[in-house]
Length: 363
Image 1 (spheres, rainbow, N blue to C red):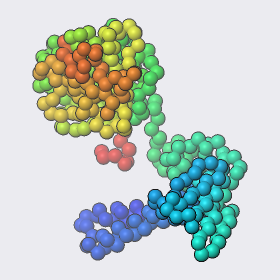
Image 2 (cartoon, rainbow, N blue to C red; image 1 turned 120 degrees about the vertical axis):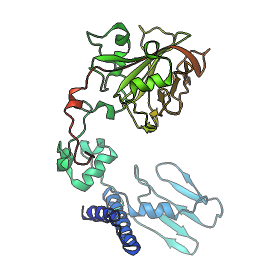
Image 3 (cartoon, rainbow, N blue to C red; image 1 turned 90 degrees about the horizontal axis):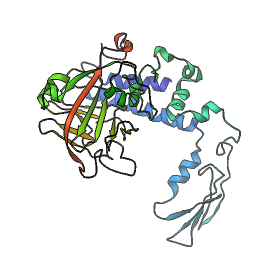
Image 4 (cartoon, rainbow, N blue to C red; image 1 turned 60 degrees about the vertical axis):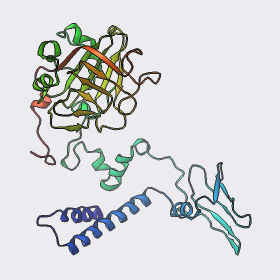
């Protein structure tokens, strides 16, 4: 904990105004890097990895040996028969010890108690914990891990902040007041901020105008929204934008964004839901003067030309079977559209109304 504090203070001191002189900045940077390295080594050692494992892994010349898998691993030189290296690996432990034979003499290395991990069963909570939780526990302890508000910071739950989680494939239920067109896609809004919110038709291309400018006039400054469109060939497609639009040229990071489609146009069947892949980056491209867009190529709608483009696989999941378009086969990746509608919440949710920024956020 002390090393973590030293590293944090050293890094923060480099950003002070006015800045440190060059020599002091270099010294602070050296202290921060050294503290971080020592802290990493201590955490690494605390995790039970043997120092012999590190030495054994780095002592094998690249390209000189081939690893023979099995209960006991063996490595034999492909360049010289006179020298050989044998690695003995206990079950489920990588490179816990080794015995080496060199041309000049025999050197035997026995396993130390530190080289062999305990054979006893670990606690269930430690086995099931993810790497971040284990890292946090190693630094702050189990009490802080089990505290619902560790260090005064409230945990974000999926119930309170659903859009911080990837989309779910579970289906929700429609609201009694939903019109038929909303009831068709309402189940796919489960685990989103709009799941239980009455929706309002904020933009209708037939009503407000078929142009990117009309779209920006109606939607810039909006919150979470759902787009629903229909192609000339009958495909009904849609997309969920948890961040809304501003028109500032942002590339929005939204792990909960997704696409959905009824390729044959029959909305009485279950739609195909296509979540964001590869992390949250560039989920929604919010570029001034342009139409709605999910990823660089997931779904892009040009209202000026009444055209939609969809290429799946790089930013949004492909169709079942590996298809790379949301549209029908004859349309390919580019389809003409005859309807575009966008829905938003009729009013802010209770969590949005009562939102209070944490001390780590800008006011």
